[in-house]
Length: 247
Image (cartoon, rainbow, N blue to C red; front, side, top):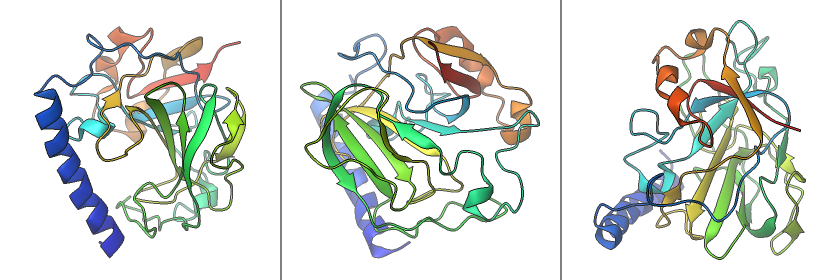
């Protein structure tokens, strides 16, 4: 673990303590919070939820309140594989280099660039060759306190700048493998505040999307969690589901 990642890990621990004290166990949930904004998927075409959901069982990181309702998205083929070719090369993965889009209208609040893609191993050990676990990322302000984070972006692909107004569906970057990651994917979350360390994650209500079962998903992920996602759409999606934006 490099020094920057260690410092960020300590900040995350501090954030957990701060949020526990502030919310006294009553963090935003699907029962208590409904987003001020309806979100679109931040990409074109069919992608698969590799991590994420609105329950403790399906959550990306339930024990980390800032990332409780985050999602990791990948693209899988009909055989349940996320790549074709040499699996240690980022370019072999179907999602790598694909356009990442603004999920709603907003203003760019923060960006991070200059981080390389991380190493990919055959056993998918997570690694971080960046100074930030998010790698290259874009943070967008959509309303008074609602921000979305799009992370692990491809080096030199970010096309927006801080303070820029952007529209839903506008290309902001490309999918990559920067930051703390095991293979190329998009990390997407909505948070109540600007800080990555002390803003609670929010359940994301998606609008006008198509959800279906992912063929051979168990070949990609053997946790058998997809059945727990079925009862929450609409408007919430979960691990194992294949999603695309509707017309």
